[in-house]
Length: 108
Image (tube, rainbow, N blue to C red; front, top):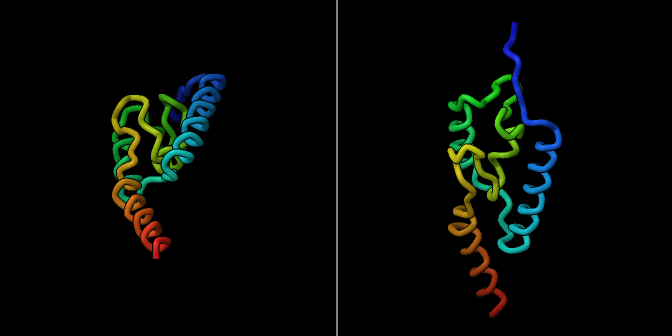
């Protein structure tokens, strides 16, 4: 017999999705960065796998109800329990350099 998983009510999952969608659009407009690197995604997912709220059958979080393969990839998303945070680190390290290079090419 499998253990029953309790997720937030559907209205709460919907609210979480709406808030996330709004933040995603805001972030995309301001920074252009939507996703973190594969390395950060792997680090985040490993943290989730070691959490008591991790549902291995669905690769899902029972705290927020999110499907984790998607959640860990977005730069603005964070763990609702504070185990990992939103990060624009990749964009600051890689994206910013690309913007500067494009600007320099356009000056020529």
